[in-house]
Length: 209
Image (cartoon, rainbow, N blue to C red; front, top):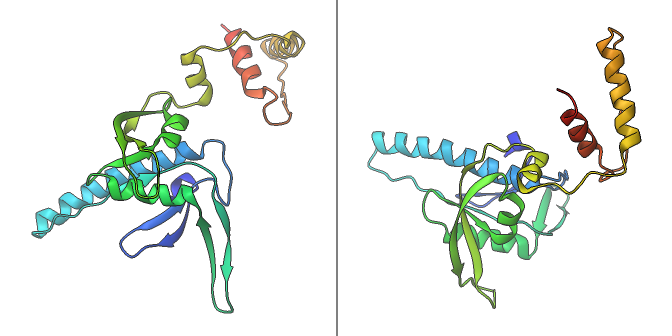
């Protein structure tokens, strides 16, 4: 969990509750959660085989993931301080975990939609879930795809036409030409989130042989 900047905020006896995106927010929190879950799967599968080789015990585990809004805050008294998350998102993640077959990572549709470009998943159909009036779609995470970056995934789907940045591209091309003439250049690109910095660099890189 910590490897992917998540937070273990609760121990539930024989399990844990981990958060990704709170208290530290990331735009790829769902991907981080699935990557962490698959990492746990690899580690725990090896551990299960080791246990069974030494003892007549079958070690089993299940992982459930859900994505959505949660209410987070600190619950404190004079002796203790606990960071807690509550809400329907947490409850449905727990339902996914309890439904999962041993050794599997189950995702809700909310999580699947956020990670489908980055992870191979298998649709499991819909399940009746306690507390839900309608059936809930579930997916099983299988493995990470070769696509690693957000723009790699977007490119695979097909990008919209790139317009309105000819001036910025010409500036970058000018600095590149200076660098090719042994005059080194450093360019800093800044802007608010969503302004198109990554797309600008992607389109600029496409102009370089």
